[in-house]
Length: 248
Ligand SMILES: NC(=O)c1ccc[n+]([C@@H]2O[C@H](COP(=O)([O-])OP(=O)(O)OC[C@H]3O[C@@H](n4cnc5c(N)ncnc54)[C@H](OP(=O)(O)O)[C@@H]3O)[C@@H](O)[C@H]2O)c1
Image (cartoon, rainbow, N blue to C red; front, side, top):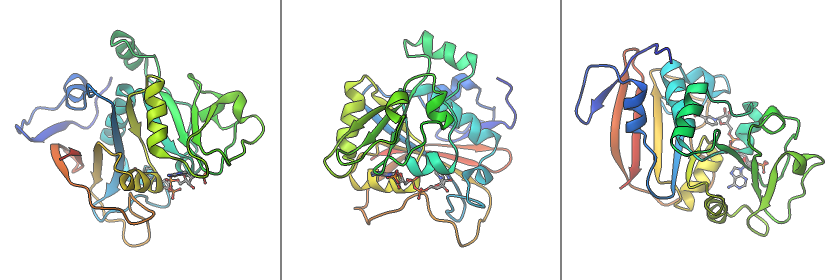
């Protein structure tokens, strides 16, 4: 791919030379066991959005890693709130990234997985209607699917009256989707933290102050503190930090 703003490693083993895609792929490599990775971008003062969207925080290097993480996962999990608000499109990968997946024995595209308690979802949204792989919707037994949703997605109840996220992850693993990337949003991240399901957090810090107003990357009920250990720090020449933390 055409590489724009260089990304280099600050820690461990600082190296000034830019990381190419092969080096980035190695740094974010797939785990050899079932694994849940969460990816977010935030401002220096902790905002999850600028003007209501994550786009104001993200730049070319963040998008590059965002795409790379999609290439590396089996399932791409997103909360219904983020899917609706950000107008998720069908998952697309470049021919080069699809070729990488084939060479590594993976399906050509990851499976989109949507978490929704209400099933207030539009089957006509491109994320469903144009999906290259039939998406999965994790919900609970009391939710009623809107007309057309079961035509474009597997609607899977996990839990009687709320989405049991641990059971949902077990269902994904049963389907052979062991490497899971969660792209948010904050309520889902908060619930995953509360149930201690988060194995890794990739956090891009955008060099700006968003000021008061926007929420944080996590939301919902209070949860026990979880300890993480730092795995790497990458930086771009325009001041973006890319941090990778995993379970301590
Ligand atoms: N900076 C970033 O990297 C980033 C990443 C993602 C999102 N965002 C931003 O975050 C905002 C969206 O946040 P949000 O408050 O809507 O939170 P969210 O977590 O994206 O979505 C909340 C909704 O998702 C479903 N959901 C989440 N967790 C659930 C659980 N444990 N069980 C059942 N359903 C669950 C529910 O959908 P139903 O209502 O269908 O039941 C819930 O109403 C947007 O502004 C977006 O731009 C930023």
